[in-house]
Length: 166
Image 1 (cartoon, rainbow, N blue to C red):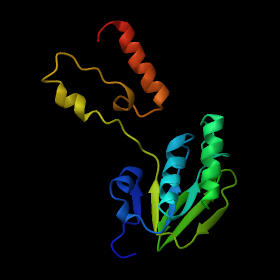
Image 2: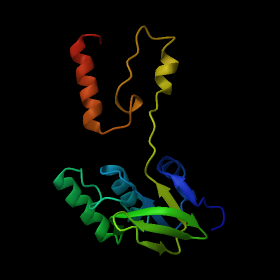
Image 3: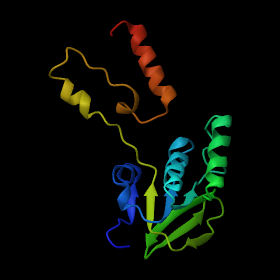
């Protein structure tokens, strides 16, 4: 694979797409929303061969229906191999071990250059810490508080706005 990383987080893959190989497995795990779908779409648009794994019965099952339809259709039109009820178990020598989420049946996906994990998002509150000494008051909301959906971040902002503190 010559200079390409084998296993990347989504953030690392977006930061430096040159480190992503030709055949990519996007491991969505139990994420039921946009991140796995959007990452798969991004990579497929770049001409990469993409396999999207989801441990759920439907990838993106919590996405609003019209948006989910549009994204799944676009992924299928671009030839993305969507494998539901499938978890990634281990990656070595360009082979990704797979496990069915319900039956535990094991299989292997071969010739994978890069695995991109869509999980383990952590709050990014570094800006709040840097502002604490210079701003009279700092409120941490949205993904800085806890990575969630846009709806939750908007609700955090609305709640804060209603308190009259800002």
